[in-house]
Image (cartoon, rainbow, N blue to C red; front, side):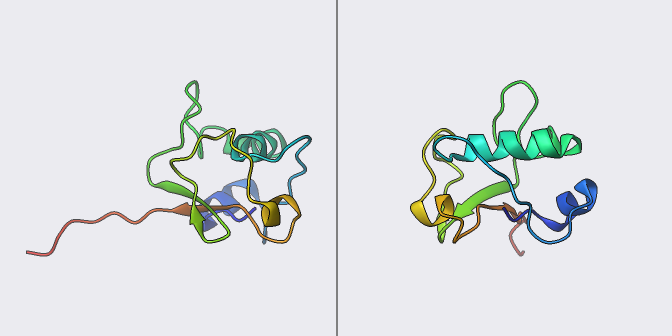
Length: 98
């Protein structure tokens, strides 16, 4: 799993976070694994209580934006096989130029 630099620093991770998921891999399962292994990340990717994706974070896998998909939907096969990462990417927001 690839995380934004600020979350890597918070968790003390260098490189990719390696998470084992039991059963069918889903975004929800991967995030549960991340939060269990790195408790300091709880609430940084998903909101406490609702479990919704935090604003300004997006989920990508195999070149697809999974941000608006259900979190319990199975991940693409290359991610399940460990050939491609699930990526959490910080979205960029800005205003329009005058």
